[in-house]
Image 1 (cartoon, rainbow, N blue to C red):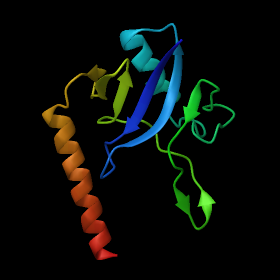
Image 2 (image 1 turned 135 degrees about the vertical axis):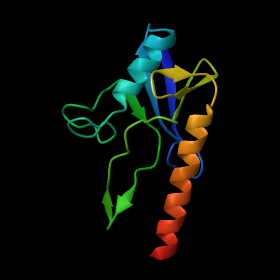
Image 3 (image 1 turned 120 degrees about the vertical axis):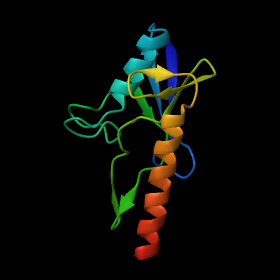
Length: 123
């Protein structure tokens, strides 16, 4: 049984480990694809164990966001997030996965962090 650790870092100021996904006997790209798929909010919430997107293969380890005292689900895994398998990090890229944090991923992260800081300054 293999496990992929999902770390959200695309839209966060610092990386947040959010899930460990049991990928069974899947290896390599197939394991990464499965972990990515299992951490998507398509019809409901993967992290709140919704009827459609929830899965017993996913162990939620991250903190849930809160709003007005209500627990919200964790966002979907996206471009720039990191998946770790057997101690090796892979980044979600525009098409598939890469073992290096590309300039595109870095630029996306910088743009997001800058936009959030500006929004917070206006609030």
